[in-house]
Amino acid sequence: MLHIGQEQFPAGDLCHRRIHTQTTAETLGMLGRIIQTLNGVQEFNRKRMPEREVAVDGQLSNWAWQENEGAHRLAYIDNRYQHTPV
Image 1 (spheres, one colour):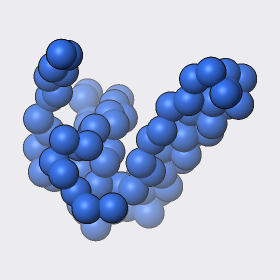
Image 2: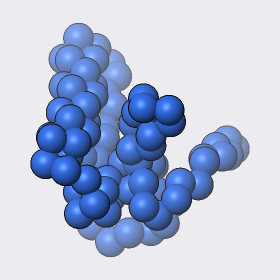
Image 3: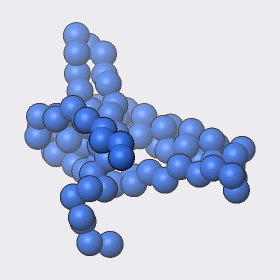
Image 4: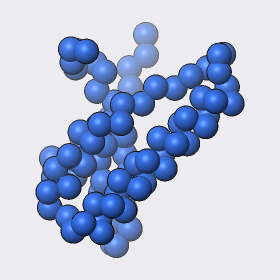
């Protein structure tokens, strides 16, 4: 059995909340980084399927956007163990 620990992010850093507190330019930059990351996952899958495939949920509540001294860090939050109904 494998257990994976995950950082807990401040609620205000979750992307679905950040879109309400940022400027339009900041939000577009954040969304651009998310889309760029999702495109990278798609490219990874294209090169490795059918042997290997990675699935990522693109909804904003699964992403955190943190500021640190003018730089930004994008983090994906894996919440599959919360038994969210599909």
